[in-house]
Amino acid sequence: MFLESKKMFYENNEVDPIEIYKYLPKLDCKKCRYQSCLSFAIMLAKGEANINRCAHLKGNEYNFKKVKSYVKMP
Image: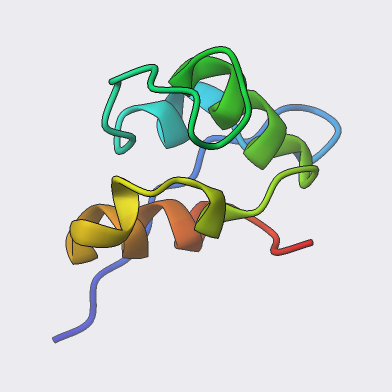
């Protein structure tokens, strides 16, 4: 089954952080070393954070794959 990903991009080809944020746990636990899940999403969109820093995302395979499809791994 082929699923087409709808990615929202800014003019500079960065992914919209809100698209990433939708799939983050929104716990603001700071285990990723960012102040909030939104801050983490912004840094992921810029390609300046590693998806593996989110301890809670690792437990949700679907959301992990969705976020991974949006980000460039540093």
